[in-house]
Length: 159
Image 1 (cartoon, rainbow, N blue to C red):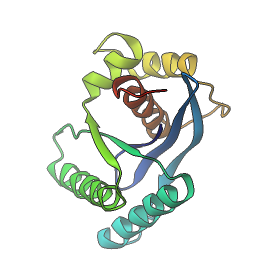
Image 2 (image 1 turned 135 degrees about the vertical axis):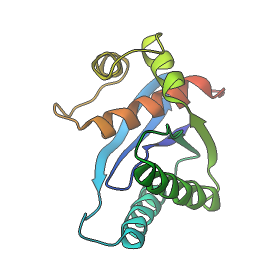
Image 3 (image 1 turned 90 degrees about the vertical axis):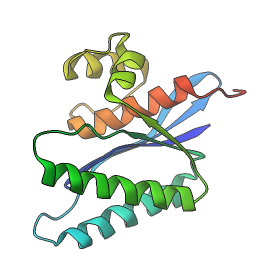
């Protein structure tokens, strides 16, 4: 099973493609996709949409896993992230992917066994669970890998 996992945003989008191969999780691709802050928001959404479509075409995942949105104090930012998230869900659903959403608590619990783990604990365990060749990874990219691992662990397969 191949999973496209995304840590949603509109300035930075963590993207990872993972696959379960013979009961082992393998990282096929990861990146922190950045939009141009000088562009208008609709253009940034289009950039994100194009990148998601490119990844779907290149890797042909069956599953799309995305983190649910936590509302913070900045409603303007939360609304834009929600819009970007909606666009990504729409694109992947149209492409025929099965959609799975996970809360930060579910992801932390799946990766570390503790729902209140901090970012450094999640990164340390993620690196122990799957081979990551990159040394320096931006948080959003690491989060996407953790989301993908959560999906692979929670979705029942025949592999």
